[in-house]
Length: 156
Image (cartoon, rainbow, N blue to C red; front, top):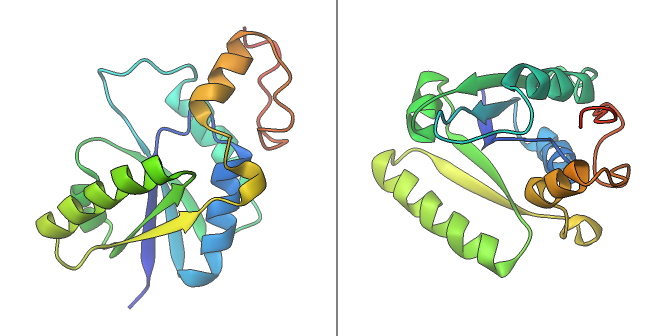
């Protein structure tokens, strides 16, 4: 039986923090699906297609990492993919409290689903997609925060 993990998020855009979490999780699982959640009520800075393309480029040399999109509850998507694990990155104690609650609710809905909380590397703990989007909109230098495959120059 393959150990399939889902790393859900909006990845708008994917950051070096996300890449670090996935890279560190790769040895733990047979397959990791970076699952871009689609919420029709949310306004994204980048299109789903653009985000998927960037993630595929970032992990092109990592055959066990896949990229997909989904709608609805993450637990339902995990069931569809026969995934027994969710990966989440933790940057702060506030992240931990939030993710712990979600993990416990997911476990109540799907008892065979476990969540792996991976602490961000200290030097990356301040990086979030929300802050990076603000830097992009303000035409700031994002080179320290985004993988080299993510080119946002000229997007705004």
